[in-house]
Image (tube, rainbow, N blue to C red):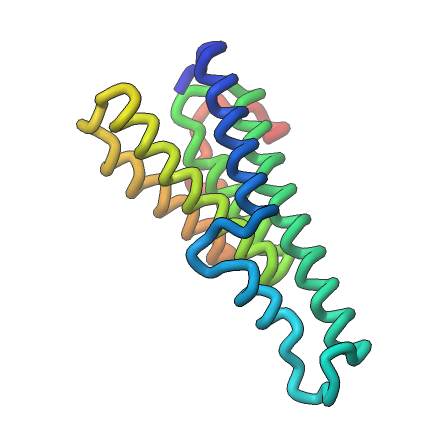
Length: 165
């Protein structure tokens, strides 16, 4: 799909909102549950046990790197400006983030879910286009799940997309 200048600036705004939501913890799972799982360690007796702290830092690192992978896929999508390649980039971003570990998977889920909400809002409420919203949303979610499950994102690659992507 070709993006115009207005659409690019709108998507940049939406991506800014997505990353801000990661920082302030806007998600159905919540930051508390993520960090609670990150520091759970059956062998550690104290909360500040070095094993727990290092595990939590590892989880936080995988989360930030996974969010970076999602951002890189988004920028590649914008740079490629190739029609119908969005599903490939969604699958690739989720795949790369999932390869980072549990934090990357969590970041990919949150960012993907938030992007879906924004897409529905923008298409339905702002432009009044509801005809293909659900169909497009389901195919995007299929590509995202495919990537997060560790399967090859090239399944969604379109003909003519530059090799550098």
